[in-house]
Length: 587
Image 1 (cartoon, rainbow, N blue to C red):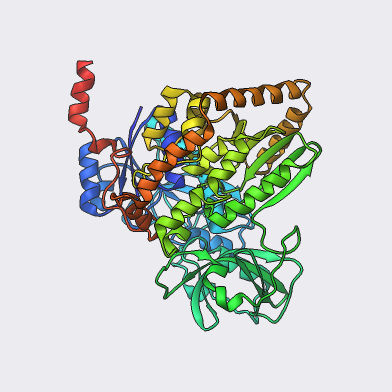
Image 2 (image 1 turned 90 degrees about the vertical axis):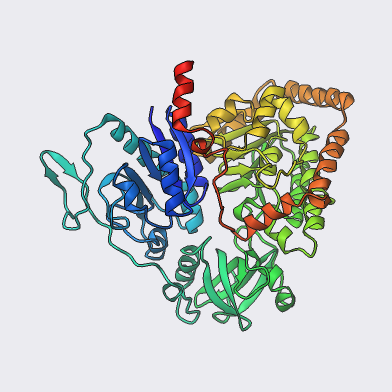
């Protein structure tokens, strides 16, 4: 077992995945946010790690650290790729094969000796989606390989040598081909859209290369906005650069050979300089544009239903997994319609990147009253609680949540309102609210969690404040099954399982049993009582004297840097290695 310290800018999705994977391998992992050199050095001194891993850094590790302890950097690029814009350039240059490289820290950024590299095929998607999926999967494989090599000892990593562009060996060891290069920080100049010159494909690549940070700076109605969340339009066209339609929260802008939908903007000079739905920021300017009803070939689709045999599939790939009040209302209407179809099973698919993360904190922050909008997002007519209630009370179908992507907070418990949760291998769950300023949480979790996980496990889950992998979620009863597949293979497997579920002879008996259990539960304690108890506490979070929720939400939305690492993940700040070793000896 190794003692591993993570130095990271934030506890993001990739860092959480590696944190879980390494602990499952039996290693002890502690995390320190990279605030400054002094704090980093203090963490190393306290923890005395065998190995340091940097999953997500924005600056170099100081020599005083890497000179004494092996430091492995996780870089989202192929061997030899260097620079802070690795994925940006890969997308803009339309690379079909990319990779993740684990290299050792030295004096030059990204120029250290190479330990492992893992290739992947890219998709035509945003940088954020590529990072959350292909990069994260490749990084998990590469880091586990590197850690295993470190454990064995005597491994000599390969020096970065740009002359090695062909297969070669040294002392019988096959060397990596170095195909990458030093790339500069990508600027707005390289991303700038030339509406009278760029094709739809180029416009998409430019916006996707900057999603979710920093966005592509552009001019709309004489004001500067950063563009995000771009999708191709297949029917509409118009004068290049012209806004030609709107659909939900998105605007449609013409290119020289078609058009693109832009779902989110960030106003460079706004009072609220964070991402919001495009039509929210441009409300008065675009109200005269024709509104498009989305389908498979036109419009901006963030909710759609498909049916195969006796199974209905409801997709809702909301941007960043956030669910605003209006989105919850539309999703509930779509779910109600799905229940009226001649099917036996309804599968809630969520999206590729996220199943759901619950409340839409950006919309809440931008509201005239954040407290009122928080309340509406949870409890207004047809908002998250009513959607969860309808799913729990569905007596006409068996219901499944198919988690392709991660889920957090209220999104986890919205998923748990179904009969079965099937999760893709590698999905990360954050089934707690407390990190958002001790938010109590709703979505009937006080009913659902004990029902499926048991009282003891429920207490552990809600108090832990830690990300959870599928292995732990399964053992605790939070999910029902892990499907060892990703992407299209996962969807294919889900469809087979759902079809089998609808076709089993015991289907009717199971549906009847489910409904009887719900009747018994309701007689014992009505769902309305759970809801009232949860909302009484949530009301205090939103409107009470303690501002912790509002401060935490503000810091999250405005991306205020952490001033310290939470003790839940900073093991070394809970107990010193010396004290820990004495305790172990006493045991």
